Length: 219
Ligand code: DX5
Ligand code: ZN
Image (spheres, rainbow, N blue to C red):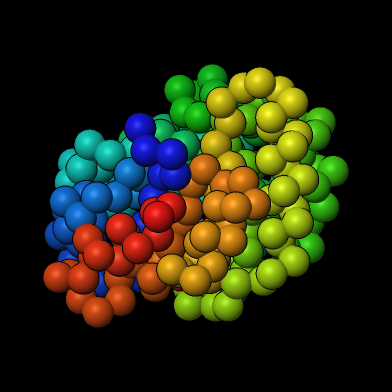
């Protein structure tokens, strides 16, 4: 596996041809497919849910890195497992019993992830670090693609990097929001092992996807 996983966010893809877009980013070198689920309640935007993900599953063998920006989560965990999610990442604000939610995700056969909003403290991670396989640091406020990277999140990445190293476990540290060829090297230097990018991958049309993905990797 590469040192840094690139997980293009299909939020920036052409929604009228999502299957083809996933095949294109797979062929262009994506390591995972980042799937943003928004409910119009936890975040001020709407995307799609398990039935769409299930239909997309057949278009690639790459892992589906599913980022839930929705509340509640618990009633839908089995639906996401059946739809073919590999990693299921939740925000701690989405429900009252985060540890139980993470356990339920693992019990359903998926890898649990925890996402921190820009204003959410690092201290939320420590009590549940043993229950997660991925920590996602939001470097924009969730809800929309195409926003600017919030620099203060680099310090949070550094802090979580140290916490993960102390566990000795292979926990993915992922950054999401405003990541492009300028900000990616800074996030990598701070310690991420996975990069989500929407607009930076899907810009300039399908012929540019491979170059756009390659430009995010460490040089
Ligand atoms: C934002 C989503 C991101 C989004 C990133 O709420 O979680 O995954 O697609 O888009 P860019 O890379 O354009 O900031
Ligand atoms: Zn996301």
